Structure formats: structure tokens, C-alpha cells
Length: 184
Image 1 (cartoon, rainbow, N blue to C red):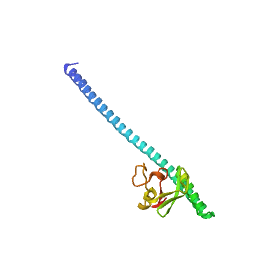
Image 2 (tube, one colour; image 1 turned 135 degrees about the horizontal axis):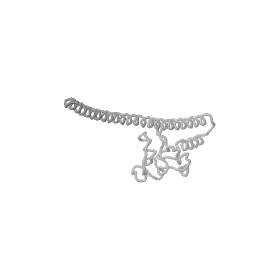
Image 3 (cartoon, one colour; image 1 turned 90 degrees about the vertical axis):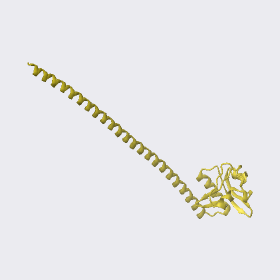
Image 4 (tube, helix red, strand yellow; image 1 turned 120 degrees about the vertical axis):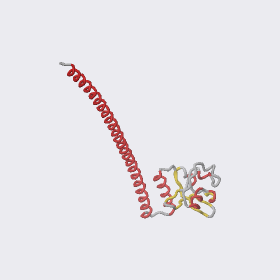
């Protein structure tokens, strides 16, 4: 082998090594790019799965809320039918209404009040409010009056601290409002 051929072989080997090194770098770069793309795909799939899981959770809670609304509506209709087809006097109807309100709303008590002059008289009550049945309260300082006057539901976390109302009866009873109509 002559010197020129030896130099060509060494040059070819160096070129091969350089090409192999570049090829390794390109392959390494491609592997990193593929790994980065796979990581992005994983994140995207993970986000989609998490969003789907959240959508299922929301749908399940919505279904539960719809079922609860349907149950309450059925109880209201049942109460209306009982009052309509039953032969009750006014007092019995009020008793049925307060009992059903307490059941439907899962409250500790319920009361039905009627305005008599300047007084708010508790005509029917059940649960924790039952002790107030038949009692009269000054209308203008009652939470029920605030509800009727403003035609919207009123709520106070601390009725004793509210200057505009008397806390005596309101500690245990708050007015009920449905579809813009004030009920006391």
C-alpha cells in the first residue's frame, strides 16, 4: 500500500467518524425532539382526561341536584293535591303547609304568619318555631315585614345585631320567599 492510499484511508476513516458523530448528534436531537413531543402529547391527553373527569363530576352533581329538585317539586304537587282534594278548614291547611315546608326544605322549623293590624300573628308553626304558635309580634320590626316591604327574601346572620328588626322571633324563624312573592 502506498502513502497516498494510506492517506486516503485515514481521510476516509476521519470523514466516516465525523459523519458518524454528526449522525449521532442528529439522532440524539431527533430523540430529544420525539421525547419532547411525547411529553406534550402526554400533557394534552392528561388535560383532556382531567377535563373529562371534571365534566363527569359536574354532570353527576347536576344530576343529583336535578333529582333533588324533582323530589321537592313532587312533594309540592302532592301537598297541593292534598289541600285541593281534602276537606280541611283554614287552620288545618296552614298546619299542612308549615309541616311540608319544613320537610321539603329540611329546616328545623317553619311558621306561617298573618298580618292583623300592626301585629304579625303566628297562625301555624312546627319544629323549633312551634312554641311561637298563636303569638303576636310587632309587624314593623319583624324580618317578615322587611321581606314583604321589599318584596324579596331577607336574611340576617345575626338578627340580634340588626337594628331594623326585633330578634325575639327571628332568632328561630326567617321568612320564606318563592317566585318573587313574600310568604311569612
